[in-house]
Length: 409
Image (tube, rainbow, N blue to C red; front, top):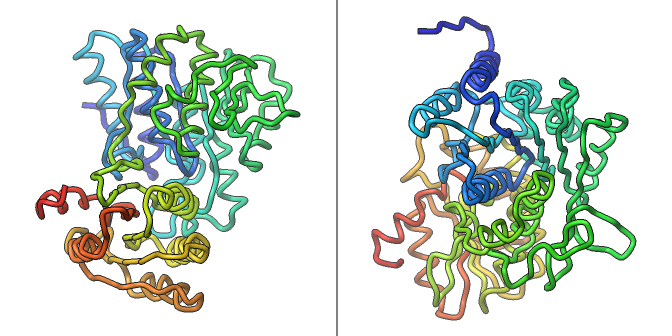
């Protein structure tokens, strides 16, 4: 038995990852993905594509909201188990939290430490928006934490790849971190414009292009909402860099099945969409895309418990911004007290700040203590041509099971 004694658990985790990879997967192609939104989908896309291309691939991404953390050495154990089961490991697609900690205590340089321990061949940074703000002093501090994914590439002289979201100005500037390092290839992805020459770009309703050539047609995309397309572009950047067979990659994307709670349609008539929208940008994107799917809009949002007043204020402000221009909407809030544990219970201060923002901006809502009651009310009110959006993190995770229990899906 290996015994590690440390004052900081993340140091033990980083040591465990490094030791395990060095001993069990030293030849594996290693990919690390971080950012506020899209980490899970991008890492799972790469996992799926590499598997379909014949690589024995491990990922730490799963369908559970809290299953992808690197706080404990779970990944190191799973890496060993994978090799013992499969015989070898050709590729690793590792999702890394952009910020990690608990209460108001940050695990400083978490992304840098974990990605450096992995000694990654690829770092992908998806985007940056307000989340986990209870752990950092400012948004600049958040960007510094996220930028650790780029700084980790400077630890080694080997050839590596940095993939950045060009549409996010803050992420775009992180290219400066690796400027002058010829061993690091820099690839941007983003929307197509006449005057930009991005490695990977998307032309609306047309295709995703790689180095100026069509890579995948619009009709072959598994999903066409903005945030999914960005995740697909990030994955394609790695495929181009690795020179994977394009036809195999396109076929893999064409047949791709999304992770649970990533803009998943649970039923038609009314349309019910379940999405892990747990921060302001996620809320805005999901409402923007979901509102187009029905006549009237019903939003059921689970308030984030034990995550601090700041993030709940910002989510409430995102709801205000998204709903103020909607002509016909119904907002139902839930504390999900019937399904959450003590680590996710909505505190009085969090509920107060959330509702105060809505009240101050004249956004009408109905508040429920229990998730099940909020879901049943939404389904009772919605007609066949409407759309119901189920938004939130841990407090909304059991929604599909509750709908099944009540024979709604």
